[in-house]
Structures are given as structure tokens and as C-alpha cells.
Length: 242
Length: 242
DNA sequence: CGGAATGTTGAGCTGCTTCAATCGTCGTGG
DNA sequence: CCACGACGATTGAAGCAGCTCAACATTCCG
Image 1 (spheres, rainbow over the protein chains, first blue to last red):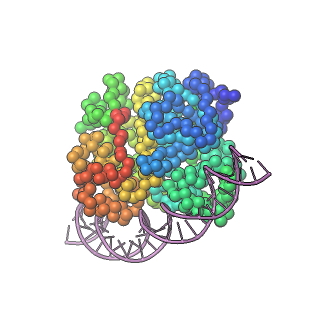
Image 2 (image 1 turned 30 degrees about the vertical axis):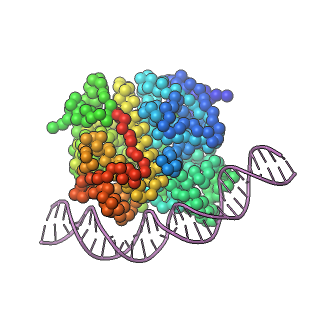
Image 3 (image 1 turned 60 degrees about the vertical axis):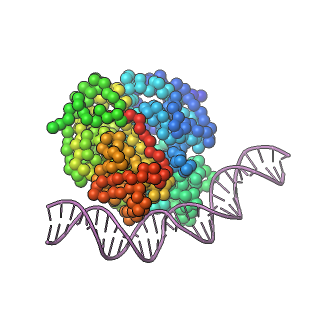
């Protein structure tokens, strides 16, 4: 059954900034429906003029770019509450692709009504900008990690960040999190080769810091992982939800 | 003498989307003054709750993040028309630092009037989001290049991108561009060590593809440089100017 | 003129890459 | 129920791209 904005399960989470009644009402009207995609499906493709924008309700995906020679760089992991398609909304064209790595449920918004939001609901428009700026911030951190840290730190950082985000969404706890990513995805996220990613993970496993099998990630020694990452991950302020 | 929005020299450039009279009038009112900084000065610091946001009128800067161990990652080169401080505008805090690498002239906007823009000038608010999304796009490309390409391609790509952006701003032509960046900056931009950046540049020089001395960059063989970069740089659509 | 910042170069080392197998798991069709 | 194939994980081996260290040269600037 489709989720109604009124009882959106995400909105209740403390990670998301509260929304007043007028805003909720506006979003109900803005929302045109839901879209369900299956694991492996492409949600939006790079270069596409997407007709809709989405907020992830459930499931996970990957944003990625593909270079001319076919190399893939994963921009980030898409989790519930994340917004998809801001670029096509404002610039007209997607600059990256989004692929589902689990079945996903997306809240759909028609692109043609996006500008209307700026005309009638400034607070929501402001939140859209906020989200774009937040994404920019995350990307900057990501770039710094990939550009400046050695492999072990990159992998540790990626796992930490992934886990923390899930925990904030109440999708993980006690160091246990679902892990639909493949090692290939972690490699493309960290800018490492698949083989080296595997060996780096093995090292973490050997030292009993994390285990990862059967699509379940377990962090046994958070302190050691933080130590390994070098960079504490700490974005815990409430952010808007569209 | 301070630039008045009415005859803003940037607005005339074809890279920037046209602005109607009401928008210009709004910006005049939004603008609180100008700020001049000298080469080497810090414009805004990571973590700071900046009171103002800026559009670069003249001069160049670097956006960068510093990691715990002191490693610096340059996020991008700041050129005229670029907006500074979106993050402090929406999230309240800067997530990166900005340093001037030449003397700069900045158009200043008070942060407390930023939300007012969303209430009274939706088209400008939309453009702000556009800029944030554009920045996100550039950052994504940057991440892909740093994460997935070997050093020679990264350096070639960085030079190409830098030159193209300057050319669009009429600050470079015929393969000649001012180059206030240091090799250290290019290294921090591409995620390479200083020494290796130097050697990579030497190779380009040896093959007579580019020269760079006395703060002047010359691209002698654009085709060869594009070939070297692998990734053609091609964002030539008009973008908003705030 | 002297000191600091920037650029250049060589040498040696290692983190990471590519290549190449092998193995385990799971879904599918016979 | 088993065999097969596809996909993902794992591991070893060899090579090199890029790193650090260490000098030295050059330019900039007060």
C-alpha cells in the first residue's frame, strides 16, 4: 500500500527535521505516486531528462558516474530519505546514474511541479537547496578521503560512514547492518581495485574488527575501526526530508 | 569603485543565464557591499558560521578541506561568477575553507536575508538550488577523475578544465591563461603527491603539450592534452549567476 | 642581499594494480 | 535431486605507478 505523507515512516525519525502541517499538505499534493524498482534496475540514467524526482522511502541504491573507458565511480550509497533527481529538476539532465541494489520504493514528484514549489512553498524550496548543499558537503568529504587517504583508511571510512547512516535511519544497531553492497561496489566507492579492496577487508576481518558475509556487516570493534579510518564520521544534525 | 549590479561585468558573459529587471533589482537590494581580500587570505574557514555569502567578481581562490592529519584536498578552483557560502547559508556552517590565490573582489550578501530570497524572488531561489546542484555535478566528476584515473590523466584533465573555465570567462584565449596556482595546489586538486605532480607536468612539457612558468599556462597542443586527459571536458551551457 | 617559498630531480621503496586461478553459493533447467 | 553456469569472493604472483626522502636550483619578496 502506498505511503501517505501524513504517516510517512521516515518523517518520524529524529534525523529528519520536523515539517509543519502546511508543508506536509503541500508534499501530499506535490507527490504524484510511488515507483517500485527491483534490485539491479536502473532508476535514472546519466544524461537522461528525467520526468520525475524521487525521495527514497525504502531500499538502497548507488549513485555512480561512468568514465569514457568504462570505469565506474560510485558517488554515494542511496538510503531512505535521500533525494534523487535534483539535477534533472534544475538543470534538466541527470549527471549521474542511480541503480537499485535492493528492491526500492520511491516517492515520486513530477518535475514540472518542482518550480511551483519555489513559488508557493518557500520553506520547502529552501530545504531543497539545503539538501543539494548537504550532498555537496558529503561529496567533498568523499573526495578528500579518496584523494588523500591510503586504502585501509578509505575502506574503514566507507564502512563506518555506511554503518552510521544506517543506524541513524534505525536500519542498523548493535554493530549489525544489512549489507547489499558487493565488494565491487566498495571498490568503486573508495577508488581502489577490487582485489585490493578484498585484501583490505580481509585485514580488517583478520584483526576481528569487522565481519561481512551473507549480506550482513558486523562491526565488532568500533573504536578500532574509527582508529583505522582516522577520520571520525560525525554528521548528526537533523536534515530536511523532501 | 564598487560594481553596481546594473552594469555587472559578469552578467554580460554568455556563460551566465540572463537575468530580468526584477531579478537585477532584487540582487541590488540583496547585495550588502563588496569585500576585498588579498592573495593568501582566508575568505571563509571550515566550520565557521559565516555572516555573509559571496559571489566572486574578480580574482581566484581555492575551496579545500583539511583532514585530521593535515592533508589538504582542494575541492575546486574558485573563479569569477562562483558562489561562496551556500553551505553556511542553508546549513549554518561552512564545510570547507576558501583561500584567495590572487587578490579577490567579492560581492557580499548577508546571510540573514537569504531566506527572504525564497519568499520574495522564487526564480532566484531556484537559481541558488541550481548552483548547488551544479557544484554537486562538478564535484562528482572530480571524484570520478581522482578515484578512477591514473595521474597523467588527472593532471591533464585538471589543466584542461581550468583552462576551459577561464576561456568561458574571457580570462584566457589562444591557449594562454594566467596561472596563479602552485604545483602544490594542482597536487592537492588531483590527489597526487607534489613530486609526482611535478614529474607529470614535466612529461607534458617535454612533449611540448603545455608550458607553465611565471604564472602563465600555455596549452600548445590542445588535441594532445584532450587525448591525454581521456575525458573531454564539456560543460558549456549557460548557468545562473547570483 | 638574504631568507623563504617554489620548482626540479634522483633514488629507493611500497601500496596498489593487473593478471590469473580457484572456490563457494545460489538459482535454474534437465 | 543433481549438474551447470553465473556471479561474487578469495588468493597468489609479478610489476609498476606513485610515494617519501633528500638535495639542489630558482624565483620571489622584504
